Length: 252
Image (cartoon, rainbow, N blue to C red; front, side, top):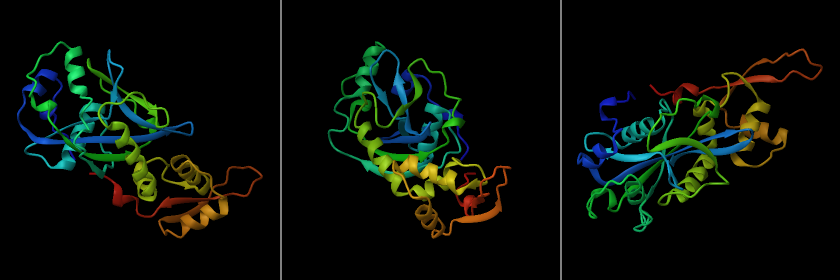
């Protein structure tokens, strides 16, 4: 999807004055990666506030829900061409009780009516993805917030119910790990079974016996075996593999 920069709401006051959004609906993106064997999630850290949130935003009246998620993710993180999957809707009536919008606006000395639309109840649709940590180095500069990676097992204080959304997003990634790894670009085009096993073990946070893992993966019929990897060592050369259906997950 091509991002429409004309809808990029950089100015907070402009956002507050906008009435072109679908009422009471938002999207939140849970972006996972890992670094040095540790699972992490991409969050927005608000300047001058002890508070973080997921990259999220509102849905314009003239755009589809998935397009809104793609746009919002790009606006908040500059990430594009990400394989996003919708995983759950969050609609508890008290989910925005610790209203981060009020805290943020107060910190910026911006006054709006108490019944402003940003303070009303919102149902949010969660989207998630597993991406290559090393490819993310173009976070936008913003006077309000900055993008940072945080360990999923050591989250900071979160806005709204975003800690719960992260938990559910991670559960979804783990249930759908086969699809996510194919689409994530976490591995080179050609990889060894050991490299693939390492990714599974980090994401699932568990260890596998080599033979059991190989048998399980090959039974999925999602890999194409290639030539052997000869590196000059005395060890037995392992086979290289590639995903047979990789093109199914490439974004246009």
